[in-house]
Length: 446
Image 1: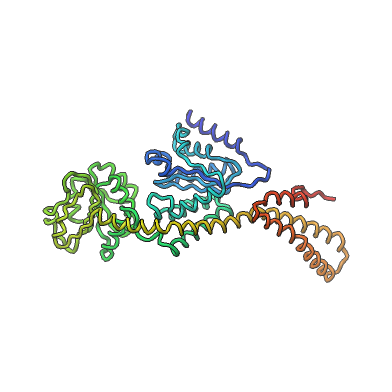
Image 2: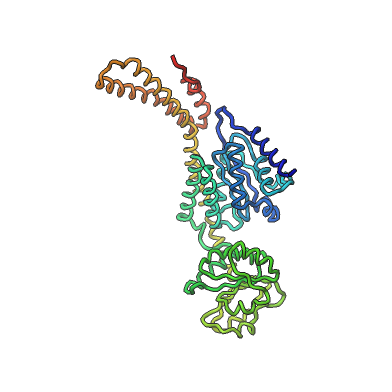
C-alpha cells in the first residue's frame, strides 16, 4: 500500500510539475542512454525493459509530459530513451523507469546514464546506435531490427509525430546506404554469430538440422540467442545447472535435455556445439567412434581449453571447427568493418546535414502557415466587403488578382525565413515576422 501511494503521489506531482505550457518554444530532441560503455552487465540487467514495461512508460510519458515524440530502445547492451521536449526530463524519466521496475534506489544509478540534451548530439547518437557503430560487435546487424521494433512501438501509441517519423525514416534510409555502399555489414564479426553463420552454411542442404548446444555460460548463452537465426533448426540445449538451461530455453523456445542424457542427444544431433569448461576434453574420439553417423556430424568447439579432441576428425563423416578457426573468420570480418567506419561516418554526417535542413524549415513552417492564414483572412474579409454586388465574372477576376498579390506579399518574408534557417537565425526572424504582421494576436471582429 505504501509503495502504491508513493507511486501515485509521484505521478500526480509529475502531472502538475510538467503540465503543457502555452508559450511557444522550440522543442528540443534529447536522449538518455545506459549502455555497455557506461554500465556493467549487472546494472544493465536491472534497468532493462521488456515490451510491457516499454508500453507502460511510453503511456506515462504521453500523459505526464504531453510528449508527441518518444522512443524507447532496450536490448541486452543498452536501455535508451529518445524524446522531444523543451525541458530536460532525464531525471524524471529515470525515476519512471525505477517505478516500473519496482526499484526504490534507482537514484543510485543516475551516474550510469549518459545524457544528450543537445539536438545534434542526440540525433547523432541515435544514428550511431542504429548503424551499429556503438555496438559491442561493431556493425551488429541485430540493432537495426531492434530500432525498427522500438519505432513501431512508439508509432502504435501515436508517440511518433512528424519529426520522429521523418527522423526514423532517414535512419532507415541511411542504413540501406551503408549496406549498399560499404563493407560495414559484411561477414560475421562476433564469435557466436560467426559460429551460427558457419552452421547455417554447412547445414544448408539438411532439412530441419538437429542442433545440440552443450553449456550455456557466457559464450554458450550468446550462441543460444543467435540460434534464432536458424529458424529451421531443431535446437536442444543442455547444461550442468539445468535451471539456467530452462530459463534460456523458455525465452527462446528451445528444448532442454537433462545433462545426464547428453550422450543420447549427441548421438541424434547433426550439429554439436560445445561450450563447456573442463580441464580434459569432454567429447573424445572414442566417444564419437561409437556413434552411427549416417551422413555427417558437425562439431563446433567454442571452449578454451578445448573440450573436443582434435582427432575426432579422423572419423569418417565428422567435421570439426574450433574457436581459432571461427575467430579468424570473425576477425577478418571485423577488420573490414573497422576499415569501413570512416565512410560510414561520412554517410551519417551527410544524412544528418540534410535532415537538419529539413528540421530548420519545419521550425519556420508554423509561422509561414500563420502568415498565409492571416493574409488570406484579410483577403476574404475585403472581398466580402467590397464585392457584394459584383457579378460572378467580376468576382473571379478580382479573386485571381488578390490571390496573386497575396503570393507576392508572402514571397519576401518566406524567403527571409528560409534564409534565416540556413544562418541559424530562425527564432529571431520568426519573432520579427510575428511582431511585424501581428501573428500572435487573436483577430477581433470589427
